Length: 269
Image 1 (tube, rainbow, N blue to C red):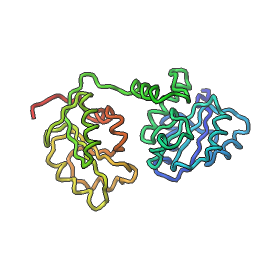
Image 2 (cartoon, one colour):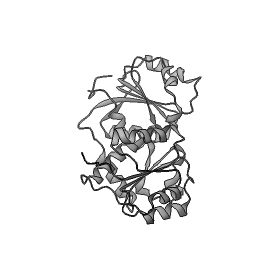
Image 3 (tube, rainbow, N blue to C red):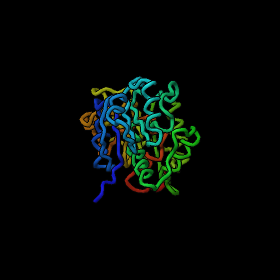
Image 4 (cartoon, helix red, strand yellow):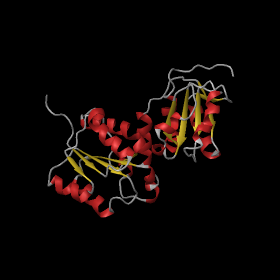
């Protein structure tokens, strides 16, 4: 069988949990097997030595990890390559206060799986993808089209959060998807904002989870990678618990609805 894997550069330090996870999943999950591995852009360009990659995957841990002049050199050297910059939790604000990377190529590490799937479709000719120069409106439209929007889904949800602005935004988003806010314990989907959290207090959420009939509970935090599996297991719950990025949840509420194990039906509270 011929090798159909795109010629790929993997650029970054595999120091964080999320970066290591993405690197480990490239082959088994996406069929991407990088030919060039480097921690710096200059090292990557030396390894390329004139070769042209199909795909460049950048793992960015910190805002100023890659010097702007090196980024410009990479972009000018590989203008036709597909480019994905997976950024970690410390780089969320880069799209507002830095413009080193084209906005269209940046993707939060929590959404890397779906973005890399899209890039594989682009490279195989099954999708067109976004150009580097895409504006915010084009990016938003593309993300909206790529999502799985539930048809006539009706579900009940409850949000517990001290952040009223964020909670109100997420409530409006879920209502647009067919959700109905209900008081405890009658929700299908229970959303718990656990920021700020610590390992000693996380078990306090157990009583809430014991008194709800929710099909699934979602713990929402700005630093999901810092919440260990053992910490989650401390919570006494009779239902599945998942952890999600708090800001990404508000940006992609349909993914929260997709966590429900079966299409929920409206029941009287």
